[in-house]
Image 1: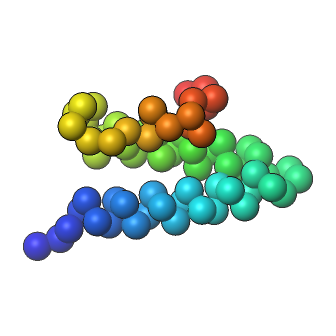
Image 2: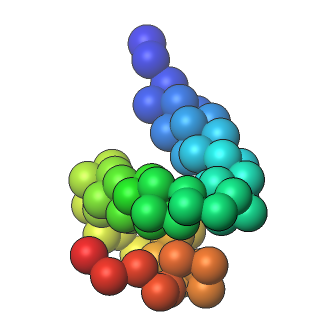
Image 3: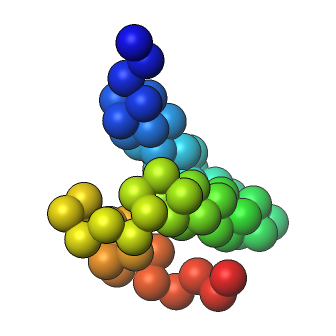
Length: 67
C-alpha cells in the first residue's frame, strides 16, 4: 500500500529546499511564490483542514503568500 503521508512529506520538503534557493536568485521570486502557493493548496487538499496535522499555514515563512 502506498504511504501517501511519507510521499507528501518528502515532496514538500524538497520543494521547500528549492524555494530557499529560488528566493536568493534575482528574478526568481515569482517562481518561489508560485511554489509556496502550490504547497499551501496541496496541504489544504491533503490535510483537509484537520487540526491534528501540523500546518504549513502556521509557518511564518508562508504567512506572506497572497492566494
